[in-house]
Amino acid sequence: MKRRIINAFLGLWLAVMVIDGFRPLNDAHAWLADAIHYPLTITGLWSGPWRLFGPDVDKVNLRLDADIELADGTHAPWHSPDWPHVSAWRKFVGARETNYFANILKAGQEPAWDGLCKYLARQQHKPVASVTLILRGADVPPPDHPTPAEPYVAFDPASPIYRCTP
Image (cartoon, rainbow, N blue to C red; front, top):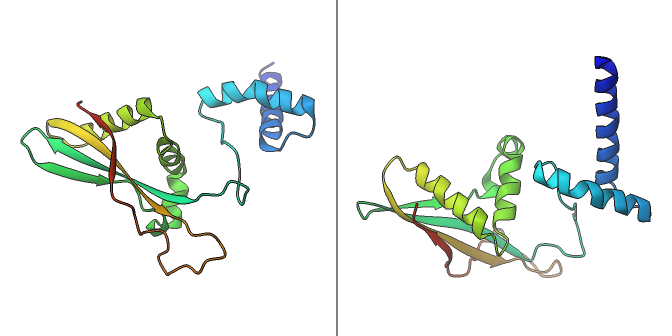
């Protein structure tokens, strides 16, 4: 009986991977993909769309910073990872962290921003007065334009996007 349950689970999981992993071939496949989307999302197993080349490629390189104001009036800076300068092993081990920062940078993520602010405050080991999240962006040039050695680091002026008091 235990083996049948395990085999049924593996068969079901294989079907879910096929349904979610491939572009819908017909209306039934699209309906099944929509049906499993919500359970995969709430369990954190949905990987999102896999748009590698187009038509909607990234046009802005975003960085997230934080100004952490401690209760004594001093400030501690925090910066999201600079992915081009992170080793391949670190990217592999931190794949979920990469997805987290990609999603948290989307507009309208106040609940997620609040959670990040509280997390950053807990990491300080000192009382924190406030945490301000700051977004910086740099335009990614079109493919037909020549690009300098570090093409995506000419960041616009910082723009505070969220402030919380833990």
